Length: 158
Picture 1 (cartoon, rainbow, N blue to C red):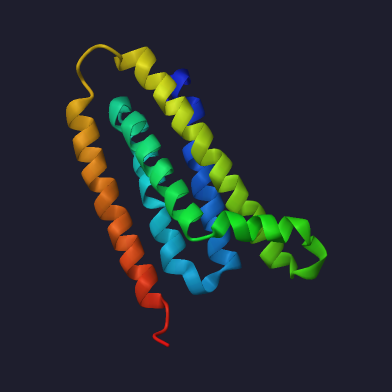
Picture 2: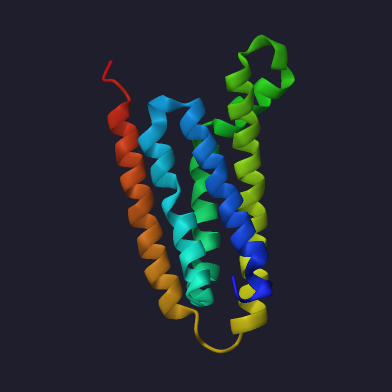
């Protein structure tokens, strides 16, 4: 990373990717899903490495907000809170998954805020937001559409 100003974004994207890698070990049933979740964070790291900051700064909040919305609507955070209240009643792996769920949520919020700060500081008022926003929005919508489809297919028909 040549620009020290991007280290926070790169660190957060890397940390989020690490959480999903750890989840592949804890939830092998969802291996493909968790590996798929790495894609936008690796893309952000590549954008930053190739000095395409405006794309990384636009992708980060969109992916994070979409992840938070899906995790909230799926009850992931509610389940994590239940685990925290009764840590002794669940296996260690389930408790670690709960900690990682909360960790990914915190990272998503911080990543969203930091990307917005960087965007305003570097690109605010220059009229450079329309194309990156539209392209990033379409990519994130398609990305999460595929993720939801895969997840839905994993649920057995009862």
